[in-house]
Image (cartoon, rainbow, N blue to C red):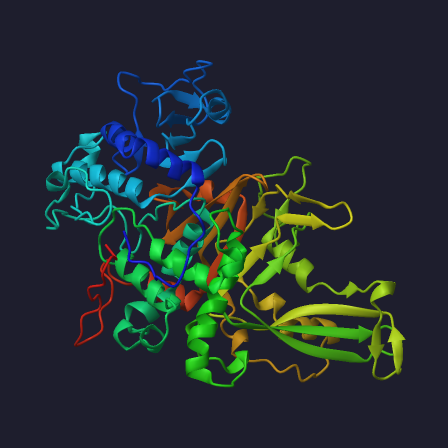
Length: 552
């Protein structure tokens, strides 16, 4: 579907899928296309003819996820899907009927194939164009935008797939900028974070106002590498184009692989690691051009202008009281889960408790982060005043707050002693409005020194310490087999972004999720962003969205 960089080789595709296509061609894809059904909320599923409730062909079970074998068209539960390739030679590739995605029964992993993606989107385009949905009474109020299917790749009844691009939509059921992202093979970690970046107010304004121009990109014109910023710009253009058919960010994925070779694979990755690698890549490409030899604190790249903050670390000698202070730049704050309830939360009714009856709150996690910690005997630090190593106290605080605050909840524990890893399945209570003033360095120092006059070096962070939540990335499942989903808050309405599917949800659904990353925007930015009209803002005197090949 996209023209790939000839000098870059992406990870090898699943060998079982390659073998299946060599033997069967596209016959199985054509069969699946006839079984595809689009629901009123644009979710594409596979429906077995004359069957209301799918059942496993082997055990007759009707619960859980079901898969259709492309070789013999049998329906099976997950257990029999994994067993099927062992019993039948060549029966290795399946379709997840709930998600309409390819699945390998040998590799036990989702697969991405541009040809299959085009089959699904071709059927979806035809149904939307003809107004056929699972429930027409609801479907009449939903978007009926026709999509011109790319002619590159599999050609299935081309004349029927090519439909008019005329917009038949009276109004959209979702706000501008909400568009599903197709899973390209265990890429839910990527989709969930991209949805956040697409809604981050300053970042969104930067790309939609032409902050990175493709026609004048120095990297694209002078090197053989893909420019990650150009690919991010392409995604913004596609998502804010008004087309709400699910979008496949395949070329962006290839570009990210180039810049993060150690993570280049079809295996599931950590959403937090992806977020950090994205900001690092943007800083590397844009920061050098804008800053030269400047440090991170003065960096003017868009990643640091939006997410850059500064942490203060005070280490106090317990023998003489001498304090050594250091500052560390950060683009997010990682928090340990705390089991104690913060004093701010004690008067509130917190109904979601963990299995052991305890509760964890975000304010408790932040209290734990900024609480003085006695360093162990094996961590004695050298005191400049005592001229020897002494026991000491360490206390963290926030010197400078970013425009967009990213909080990472440590849910994955790795023990080098036990050589094991586990996920912490604890619920965390988090507020939608967050006051960060108690955790600023100025507040911490006032609490430490009481009413004494002390030069604590406060800055503008003291005046802009109120934040509003706008996104949550959640993780469900186990460490070995999990799934990422993001929740977006737009004009006080929450939306669940689960790969290609966007659905409205209530606050209770968001609060009950196991949050992994929480994103807050400064209150003034959040209010301004949500005061925009439904259409994307346009800069005077020029076109905001310019045509980009392959974006939609």
